View (cartoon, rainbow, N blue to C red):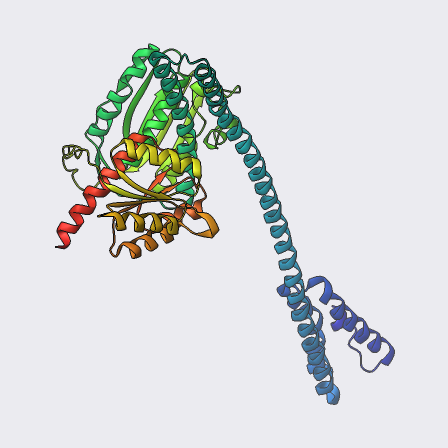
Length: 494
């Protein structure tokens, strides 16, 4: 309106005031309206258009000059509007990115702090659980030493002490095997062998395995039969369900445990119900962490080690099976694993092959720990094997060379510790010994490493890996399997 009324070229002072006022009004809207350019354009049009129309109608000879001036004013302000708008957008973008970055940093900080707390809890629990069997074993050895000093070690005492020692070592092995399983899953060396799994067969096996536990605890153990078939790794799925069932039986004092399944579209949800104490809702995620036992603050080893659910979580993630927990405190819990339904029919399970007969072979052993080497040589010798043993490949080569000068000294198998002295590995030792012998022979790697990277490197060799601690029976079975497998491979190559 000001542009229309104040356009009076014949009156210079009011006309000049109008032009200055309109120019200031147009320029003043740039900072405030540049955030939304359409509003600025509308404001400029409403302000300048009346003046441009009056210039055309009443401008006379100066109409062209007025229009050029107004066009330049509009153009300059639109340019500054665009520039200011870009700056505002960039400022807002940077601010939002900073806010998002701060949020990510806080999340990473919280995650790092949680990982640090988990590591501290992990080390404290592992240290406690390792100390218990070692403490018992130390006392047992002291007892044996006292009896030996008195010369009163009877056969019955020896059998009793050996039984206790075996039980203690078994508990220690269970802990170390649990830690090893977690390391193997974290290292990504566990291979999934998917196939069609018949749930009726799997449920039948689990029903038999936990029947005695249900009877001992006086619990009702029910398995709902199913003819459904799923796509999974049968051994890994069985272990997941076995760990969940072990927890259910361990913490259920009265009532019972139920195993069944339900269709969920193209998937099958396998469910395990129990009437245990239940789990508070805010602790559902915590129970899948290592060494977490809500009902075992005293770390009683008879109630497990607290690694079962951690292994379940990692294994289910590897299988790409979803886990779910529903629990009511004081009434019980339901754990479920959702598995895709199979598209093919599962074949019948083959009969188990009989174990190969016992054999006595010639073995090269490389172990840099003197105590372990001495005990292994003694055990292998008692099992009837001929042993060439040393703390390095060079030492074993020298011993074998001396044996060859005295007569025939064949080698059927090499057993090597993975981590040896001077940065060498068992793989290096095996290659050196095979070069010394002149041909390749079957080999076993024995390792106490739980580092994911070392486990991955050892597994990549393709050799069978034995994880310490192992029993004499396990070592003997591995020797028989390696030698028989080696013979079959040689026959095939011929």
